[in-house]
Image (cartoon, rainbow, N blue to C red; front, side, top):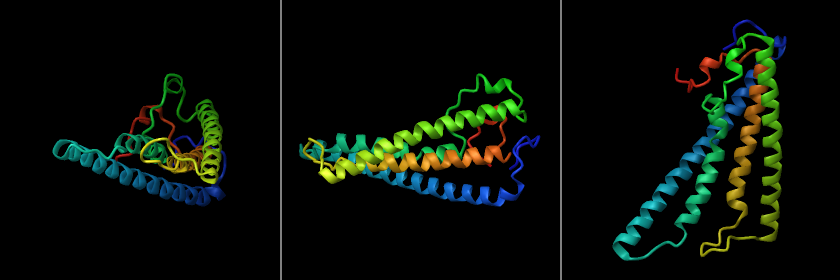
Length: 193
């Protein structure tokens, strides 16, 4: 859906590649959100198991709170790319709502903000990826009864950040190509067709 006004850089020859890359990142985002749903279902089952054990058997898994905490972090990061793809992230439209959606200034602000997002999320990804490798190589586990390998929950965060960075790159390229509608009034649209 090209933006009105055609303020994008002339990338007409690259539009099929831009759309293919977006299809690829969309697919990755869908895999991430599917994994997040599975984690959520697993957390729900674990909490219900804990409730039944405590209520009827005076017993506990002794790990539910830890595993649910890891699950919350994992599902939050795994769903980030999908949230961006669906235009469902919270945005501060204080400045951009006063700029013309088809204007150069509006597009420039969007590009700069997206580049800052790519930069900061890439740094976070590198940090978590290094931690995953280090924790795996050293065999670090949590200091709890469950002794969860620490690389595992961090792996979900790293994968989620990688998907999010790729989705940001896709958003940047589509913005430059004029494929994104930059109307700030539609920023809260959750993509319902």
